[in-house]
Image (cartoon, rainbow, N blue to C red; front, top):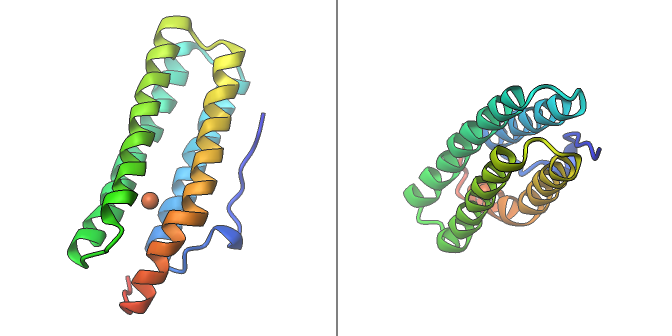
Length: 138
Ligand SMILES: [Fe+2]
């Protein structure tokens, strides 16, 4: 199964956001582990829930700062977060209906990693640059 490690290429130059991304990556790893160790469906759904909860917390942190600082690309960025949430909702439903099949486990893992890496490297880095220009510090 595809794995993900945080490295400097994922840094957006803002400590708070980098720390949250590291935590999110950890949650994705926990999910991959649960799937790989063929834990029961209940355990997998629980790990998935933890990951989703953290994602919501993380997105709301980013969006809160975007709004507060009048980030010009707020709408586009938020739209990506919302689309991600809807896709996750569908995947959770699939898990509930089909169980933790190999195909589903691989597709959720690949989706999470691909989406996150792409989103961080494009959208979040731009937001990071904006925050740095605003001399935003946490
Ligand atoms: Fe984001």
